[in-house]
Image (cartoon, rainbow, N blue to C red; front, top):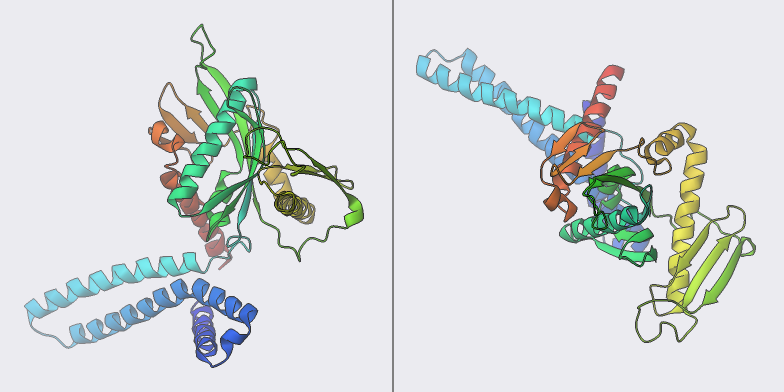
Length: 358
């Protein structure tokens, strides 16, 4: 581990020297690449520097203790040595976590898709609530959410919604939300007071970059039409809405959220690229694709990752067997405790795997 850390220190020094060199900013692509690398290495470098400093303190205190005869001084040195050793263990564990292989998609922006599953109108209302929950969480993180396409119901629900999330580390956090979410409550339309169970599926996909996915124009049918619903003066008066049909896969994308046809077309193509990259990733990694299908499934009640039980006021994440009795705050966007627990569980599993391989 320490050979790897020493190499990272040398690499960090090289990056800092290049960033400080005259003319580095002339090549903006190279400059952005260096800044991104520097940003990702900084936490490891700072922690390793602190670890080395603490290790030196342990050595010094051990030498002082060996040559000290005064009992009061020995007691004080033993206490300081014990504290430094505890800190050594903490920093060593932190370094192991920082050195865990990163998901190459973690720094990307995200396309999220929420679809109503089992439960009819109640499922559509739940899908709408999930969208609002994520929107509020995204806002607290200082990220930006932008709807690409949405299919609404007459009761204020959503049959489906696709939206872009832009922000540093968005995918690294939101990827844990992929799966089937289940709600248990008494619907407003239920006169008998019976508890109903409905589901919605959430898919979290890293945004595809232009260079990663080539789309042959001959493979896409582009239809333009007048947008429907609310959207300002241009809606219903100009052909601003865009529908893309990708012949090879059958994927259909509809975008009408912008007043400009050009902007809607750009959004639609961005979503199409992301979905095509997601399909390619699944083909390239069959095992991961199987895991993804088993998590997301088709919206069936039996394939759940999280349950929102309103009568009991609880939210249970079944992957880590965590139950929180704060459903009102969670449904209003207070997701950090849940997400922190999921990230910690994921890191713990990776650490166990890494330790077994050492």
